[in-house]
Length: 101
Image: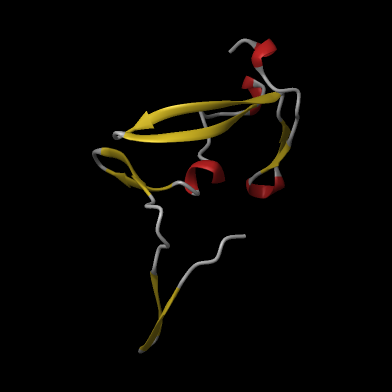
């Protein structure tokens, strides 16, 4: 990645165990997974600070659900309509519409 193409906005990321790392910049990128288009902001951190190729963050999770199987990873893009979810506790259940924060 050419560092001159990164935004100058830095962000402090906090993870599991309150571990923290400051990004060196970010960039916007559109791509396709399973024939669905996504647009994400990629936050770049120094290589020595991350033990993974990438971390799935809220930008992607707001656009799709992710399933991990023996065959691999499946992305299921949310439709434009509101999602319904079933909530149950014991014998009673209710339907609710999630709200965005």
